[in-house]
Length: 228
Image (cartoon, rainbow, N blue to C red; front, top):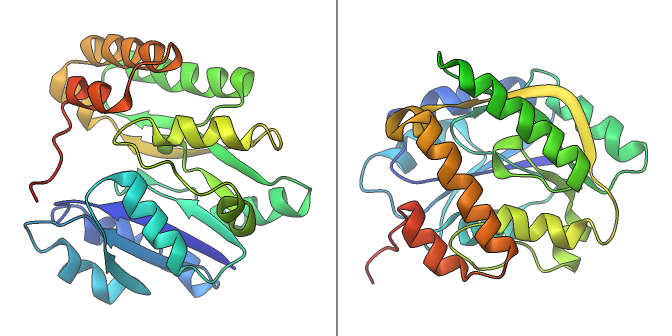
C-alpha cells in the first residue's frame, strides 16, 4: 500500500482541490495523511473529510513529512506538495517501479503557468535530476518505507531537505526517474518573477552544495520560522 504524505500550511484556498484529486488513488487502496504545520486558517478542518488522517507537527516541511511518515502503514511513501498534481496512475507507476527493483524515485515535472521560461525550467529540472540522481520535492519523491526509516528520514533543516535526502538515498541506489509528469504550480516563480526566482534557486543550490548553512539559505529564500 502507498501512503501519500502532504505537508500543508495555510492552504485553505487550495487544499480541498488538492485532496479531491487523490480520491481515485484512495479508492484503489492508497492512504492520504495531511500534516499541518500550524495553519492560521481552516486548512486542517477542510482536509479532514478528504484524508485518512490529519496530523499536526512543528512548522517546516522536513518535520511535517517525517511526522506523516511515522504514522504511515504502507510499504511505500510518496511526499506530495499541496500545489502538485499527480498523474492519474501515479500509484501504479510507483508500484511498477518498486516491483522492478527500485528503492526510491520521482516523477518528471511540468510547471504550470503561461511564462515560456517555465517549460524550460521543468525540462532542466528533469534533465538535471537524471544526470545527478538528485530529486526535488516538486517532483513528488517516493521511497520504500523501510529504507526511509533506515536512513533517518528527512534531515531537520528548514530548506533543501529534499536535496539532502536524495544525496543520502542515492548512496544506496539510483532513483527511478518516471516519465509520467506531475504538474506543479508556477505561483512562486510568477509571484517573484520567473527569471529572478530561477537565479535565486541556482544561487541557493550552489551555496548549499558548497557547504552553506541551510538555515541561512532559508532566510535568503524568504522562510521565517514559526514563533514559539
